Image 1: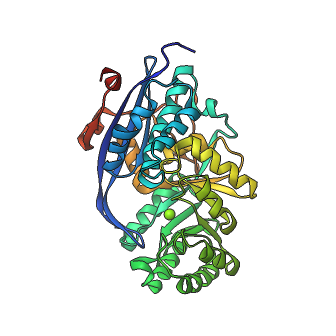
Image 2: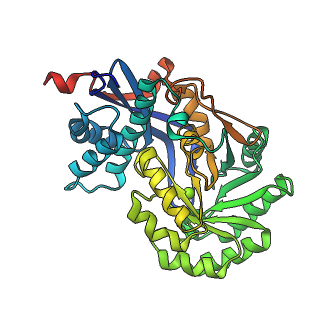
Length: 375
Ligand SMILES: [Mg+2]
């Protein structure tokens, strides 16, 4: 290990990518996706991570977390993670703060792998080289033609599982929800797994009634039928329905994961929200202890590497907004084909670097290499 391998600087930036048309799920609508990037510098190398969050996450990185990690051993990821977590005790360590910690942790794994001149996949230790994906999108705002266009895109990369949004208008349009699921079923082959995500849009009664209809339609995955905070509601639905109940995209730490494990059939984990690869591996291990598979939520280019490293993987969500955005943000993203992400382990780190062309979407930059030491 090089004596120079200490964290010498932290740069964070905000990129805002407009969607081509406004998009919505059951409980939220948006017209842009914000990526907050972190670049860590040490020993003449740099590592890149990011989270899908708000510009405020960049402020958390710059104002709160950078000081906790600058000057630390660049190989000491777990120690740095603990230092970041402890430094945020009075801010709260979930939500926005954990998204900021996540971006740093992801950058740190990339940095460490580059310092060792190995792939992140090699550093994590792969179980597999190809990571299964499912197509995800199907916003409630799409026309039938637009939904078909997405389905054809997912089919073109070999997806045999596809997920659309339901729970439209906070669960008040259940007839249209079910009609759209039927539409999806009509667009795909009979061996395609049908999946839906209500984003917590229903209350328990409608969720149960919609769930029974989904069972009749052959849907195999019902994500956040009610709020994932309602663990009693998830348990109720898990007992009543044939389809798998899935949740976990907001889990920030092992305690959140522990609360969900008894009430889901598949645990979702998002490395950009649950503490980076460090937190994701901890969550996946807890899921394994409950004999559960894990599914990675969004950010497919980042998840490919950690998803390849756990035995109890179901799949990675190939979310349309991120599948479009990540090739604009970075070079070297893992290719999706034959229903899987294919890892190139010949390059150090995760092999991804910010594209200079991405500057057109950059709205802010905070910090620069070495600036914390110069103060
Ligand atoms: Mg979801």
